Length: 334
Image (tube, rainbow, N blue to C red; front, side):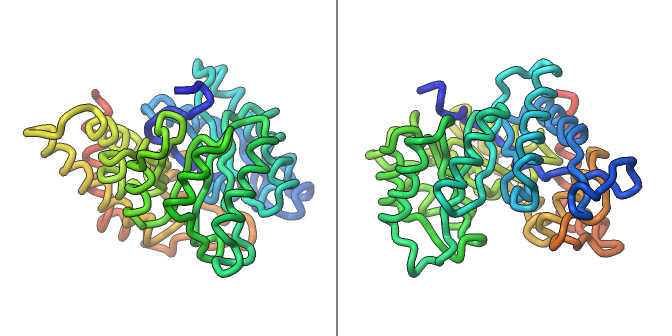
């Protein structure tokens, strides 16, 4: 495996933390928006590293990269890198999200991230013109041009929900995996068949091209059939359970008690993921605050001004999270 390929495991797509309006920082420099809270971002990153999380995805979709300025994005990545280094986690894996459509601007984001200390760029498949106009050949050409000019390796980020339904097909991944400096993919969709086809494709060297799912509810089947792990929002507030499940799935033959434990933990994780399915990014931010004490319950940057209604946290917690809370407590002592 090349050192330029990210390690297998559980990554967290971190939410971006903002300072409350009551803080001493003025929002005037951010055009009335809440300023970025790099100390809280760093504290959350260290919490995840100490909990066994393999690495971070900063400034992805959950991280609201599109709501931050170029300067803010670079400062956030460099601040987190500095904080992790000082906490005893040098070279801790950091991917950074690139959520734009043009090659020139994509390369600008990647160059900034390279200077700030990110190890990889997670580059969104361009989808401005939708699935009808965005050809599979065009996707390959886009990543060819980006990857050969990027200072850091890139992963393909396929999230049809934010790219007008553009889905990268299995045969396209075979071509993408053959491009120099393209080292993996995050699939943020529920088509398990595509995950498995790409994870098992004999035409792909999976030590040089990693396949990650964006959903922890797919961890077991994806990793059992060639996947490298997950980039999972639930692990941002219940990390130990997801890490334990990952370790069991990839750690040996699934027989006897190991098989029973994998089934138990996958059920617990899948049930808890329904909290995110129901409440989305607002639920993730609320859960991070409630569980870790980091962040605030204030509204974010426009247009994401929503939040959980009164009583929804307790309602959602009772429906989806009580089992994983128990498992997380069990694992704190191990």
